Every structure is written in C-alpha cells, then in structure tokens.
Length: 335
Image 1 (tube, one colour):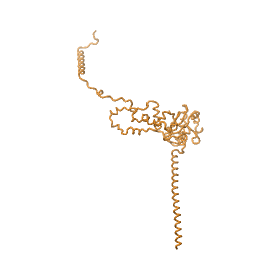
Image 2: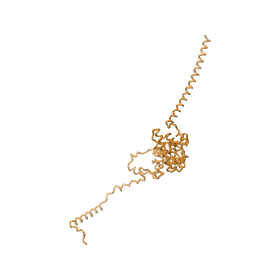
Image 3: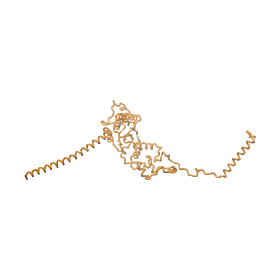
Image 4: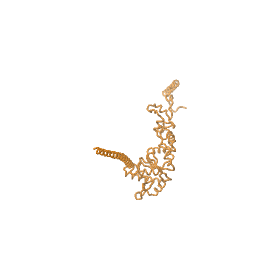
C-alpha cells in the first residue's frame, strides 16, 4: 500500500541521519555511568506530624472541648472579676432579654462614671467539666516556672543549624511544650483537682459574668439586674425601665441563682459577692476607707505615746516641786 504522504529523497536522507544520531546518543548514554542525583545521596528530613504553628497537645486541638478549654483558660487569666450563676433551662428569648437589660444597666453606669466597660462585660453559659479543667490550669500551672524546671540550660534557637531544627519532631510528651493544652499543663493541674476552693460551686448548669476589671459600681448594677435584693441591690422600677418587667425577662431571672464570685483569685460566696458589689464609691471609696482607718490608727498611736510622755512629765514635775519644798523648809530651819 503506497504511503499517503510523499517524501522527497532529500528529506528521507535527513530523517535517516537523525535516527542514527539518536541511536548513537542512546548508546553513549548507556555506556557512560550516570552521575548520582543529589537528593538520593542524603536521607530526606522526617515528615513533621504537627505544623510549626500548632504544637502537639494532650488533647486533639481540633475538638470543640479543646477550643473551649483554651477559651476558658484565657478568660480566667485575663478576668479579675467573675460572677457565677446557676441557670435552669433558659430559652433563647430569655437569654436575649436578660443580655439586653444587663447591657442597658451597664451602659447607664458607664455614662455616670465616664468609662467604656459595658461592651467588655459579658454573660455566657459555660460547660462545667471543661471550665473546671481550665480553672485548675489557670490557677496552678505557670508556664515560665515549668519551662525553667524542665530545661535549666536552654539553647538559643539562633545557634542551631537548620538541619537540627528540621530534624526536631516534638511529641505530646515533650516537656519543652508549655502551652495550656500540653501534657505538662495537664499533669501540673491534675494533682489539685479536688482542692480548689471554687470547686463546691461548680455543680449543675452554670453561667458566668466576666468583668475586665474590678469595678464595684458595674458589679452592683449587674447584681441589681440578675439577682436583685433590696435595699442594696434594688431592681429597676417600672417607671425607670419598663423593659425589665417584661415576661421574658422575669421568667428568665426566676431561673437564675447567684452562687458566688471570683475576685482577684479569691473565692467569695453569695454574701461575699454582694459585699464586694456594695462597696460605696467603688475602689476609690475603698481606698478612702483604708486611708481613714490608717489615719485613725496613727492618731491613736500618737495619742497613746503623747499621753504616756505627758504623764511622765507630770510625775517628774511633781517630784521636783516636792524636792524644792523640802529644800526650802530645811534652809529656813537652818537659818
């Protein structure tokens, strides 16, 4: 069968010569040993099981409980004032109404004090088991101390080579890992599981009100909304705040019960929390009371010292007068 494309004799000669050159090159490459590839002479670095931005943890970090643990630990580390409430099956409309009234009362206090703390004060429902674990870690685990104890002679990462840094594959049991989800943090907090003073309050469904700073004025306003008690924490009147007396707000407040507070790491019960909220004038008023008490103590000590010195002076002066009288009588007799 004749070919469909006709090839001229010159083209046929060129194709034949090119095929021969290909055969020659292939033969030469077969007889000449190939140079070894550089990536095959050295062992590849180990595959890192964890990215650099996510160190290994005692619990899988992708779980929702792990994320809640990190959130609660950060909240407890950064919140000096925390109110704990027990709630019972609050509906979404009741939560929304309570948050609305709480925000309204806090904004009113901000207007009186010329502050802007109301947006940072939040009320949220918490999971008791995860919150208790985060509380133990935030209270009893100190990363800087454990880091110094586990590695008393730390090495500077800038002096290590890139190969050493690449070959270092951390494991969950590595003591150099000091984040809040590490096994080191879990072991440090496990021994204090039943000794924390806040543990008796961690029962049932809980809600927490977090404050960015210790402010008795805002705490008094929050207690007046969430747990009113006359005369120190009166509820808003219907004339002053009609929305507070809505059915959704009142039904939700009936399901809330104040348990206690955590102030600067110290635990207060119901009455102690109300005492902190009832401080007149806030922290400034408390400082004024402290200065007045110290002044009264100083005045009492000064009066006691002056009274002792004055009585001693009276005794000495009286004795001197008696000696002078005796001397005058003796001189008159001699004369």
